[in-house]
Image (cartoon, rainbow, N blue to C red; front, side, top):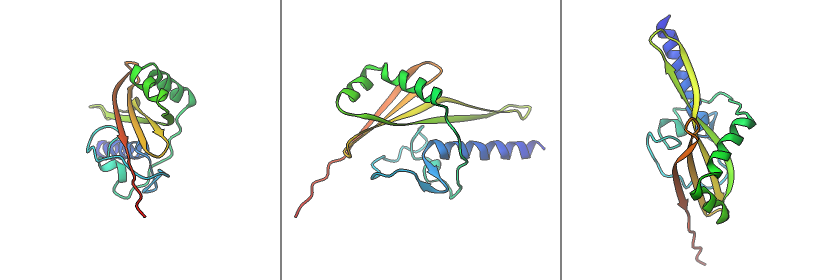
Length: 151
């Protein structure tokens, strides 16, 4: 019984991580060129969950209230305000869901962290990590892409 609960918890955590990293049925949900580097096990990065092992993620509905709360926290950060003033737009909010299995087999899942994705035309991306429990931005990763077309 305990091993069944443990396997269920692990699979639930994997499915949640896959969803949070933008994978549906083993394919990326991104529509623009991929310029995110491999960050290994970093939240929102490209650990095994980014492309997965071919497992499809379950559908997780994120409430508008959660998204609004995360966006408000991000918009109160001065560095995020500068990005928005420079022409970046908020394009998505993706919760990072952590799953905890207690000693008695109780499984709890909670989205205490989220990634706010920003884009600037097709040349810039920013990934803002928000700690929802502490109400603050903990990391901003800014990526730019330069394309020089030659005849």
